[in-house]
Amino acid sequence: MAKISHLECSRCGEKTSAAQPQTVCPKCAGPLYVRYDLTPLARNFTRDSLAGREKSMWRYREVLPDAEPVTLGEGMTPMLPSRKYSGAYIKDEGLNPTGAFKARGMSAAVTMARHYGLKKLAAPSAGNAASALAAYAAAAGLEAHLFMPKDVPMANRVECESYGAKVTLVDGLISDCGRMVAERKDKEGWFDVSTLKEPYRVEGKKTMGYEVAEQLNWQVPDAIIYPTGGGVGLIGMWKAFEEMATLGWIGSKRPKMITVQAAGCAPIVKAWDENKPASEAWQNASTLAAGLRVPKAYGDFICLDILHKSNGTAVAVTDDEIMQAFREWASDEGVFAAPEGAASLAAYRKLLASGFLKEGDRTVLFNTGSGLKYIDVISKYLGIAGPELPKGRSIGGIIQPY
Image (cartoon, rainbow, N blue to C red; front, side, top):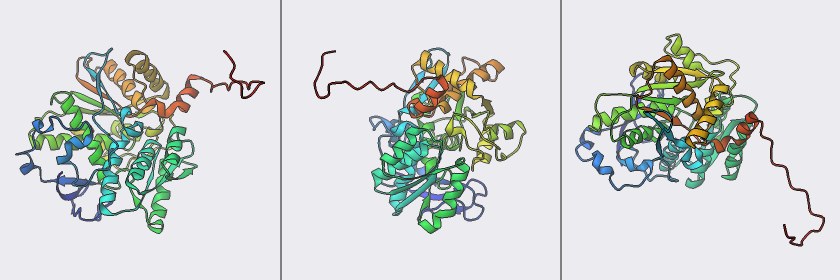
């Protein structure tokens, strides 16, 4: 695995040591990037080095932190050619442990937390990040303290409780949950692993970029459509493309990076449309796609910069469009997507209609999680009632023929 050279601020460029746990830049509070000395590594770490390795994100261990992994088998999720759209691929992150791409980031974050000797981790979450932190903390023998909106999908709450995490349900949004973590972490002795408040979740999620390139035979796609709440996946993949270019694995081409958000909570889309460098907090955020209900992302300025550099764009889709896309993926592709993931297809259809993308363009659509995590949300939207319990038999304890 790679020796970390230093941590670098994404905003001001300040360099910080990685010898001890860090949260954000001590100078300007910007998110920190992990930096490695890739030039000498490139001499021995080639694309051929991956042959025969484990089918997990840790196959890229030379560009991940040098620590014993806390792993549940995350990564190397399928890249499925679309049956309906020529040139489109579905990257199905719902097959990760805990059913979402969040497993990647938490595997790396908890790996480093254990490496540093931390004992108590805390995070706000719209659902799937909490499930992932709870699972990986359990695997590492660490405490997890989780703050989620009280209307979080039931699967997330059940998972977190089952893993033994300390769960607090909050009457509010993820921003309110984040405020509570920030207010209590010093007193409680928690280390905050909120989105972009520590540097290693990006490292786990960047492996999606490595996989996209490897699964397309090292041909970078024309476009990537990514559901964006906190934006770490988008940021991580962009970092991966830069690293792969330094290693000599890919050329100068970069995909158009496309953010999709829910119309009921689209701060990055609004900032993009208004040509602003950062977003404003979205008021009265509302969408059935819980992971997209992020009023203001900590790394919004990074996401917007990536959209500009890649000649990408940002698209908002309604909840109805999301659910129409959910049903299309399920019936046409056999993919039971999370609402956030289905937003990718809804955005793709809009971009085809507008001419921003052509159907022949090689486009990767990310399904960020399994629809099984959202059964309560999906069944309610589709008007499917819960199961009717069978009536009790009059004679108990005797097996009767049916």
